[in-house]
Length: 326
Image (cartoon, rainbow, N blue to C red; front, side, top):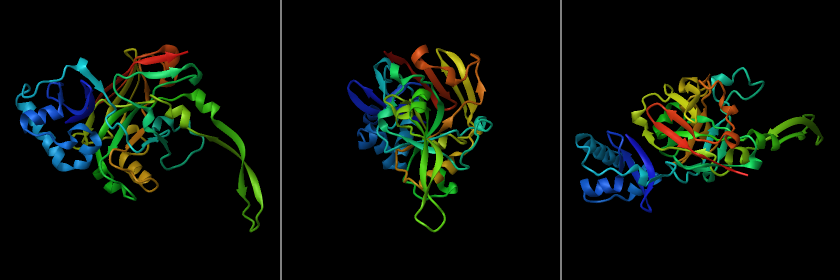
């Protein structure tokens, strides 16, 4: 079963995917089938917070549609504006260099997951435009599996982690290497000397801050659907593809993630409390270059435009046009 956040005729609501791929309004389905509309029918975080009873209600709607696809009128796709599945998560935690394809390129780095955080301003839904300004420099896509947190996770173990997952969606982690280079410092960091005195020493260091190059407006297309956890038996056996203007750029499988979902969620929860609706993006899929012969890093969206799409087996396809400014 797949769920989305949509806007239809100036009304925000949840939608469910019918057995023939039709888009069905959850409030309308509840009105027709149950005679009453639940408060959570309009917002994904409200749905997540409503717990198993809400999922059971959605399952009954889906079963009714499977028995009779015409039980609830489908929404004309032309009327649908897709929101990101969770419109305002408290945080989007992203993994850096979390793919076995990176192993030969990493000269030094941590043995644990490396995490950076994006804000909700970066989120856009399926079909919304990635906006690329001239001064952003080079901007490229990064296809990723994203995990939606279903209940608060703090200091949990990997064995407990999947119980805290609501579902999975598609993320395009847009990146500007130009802004990354501009926001990298090579400097002498001040460290205390380990000699029992108050003396200091200067240590040659590099540091980069991801605020602009990962978190600019529209740099996180996401969706359109969330596939519920119980409908994705193994999140580490999913094919991922990224296409630019209809041509395959890269393909991969989530089995190639260096750090797996349970380990990552547990690790993050030991530093940052994960809340319902929070998103954990698992890192870029880039194991195999596609038929274009160019890696995702060569797809400069400012120069080449769009659309760009990311597809994940069993979840769906996220497509984004590109608007270049300047």
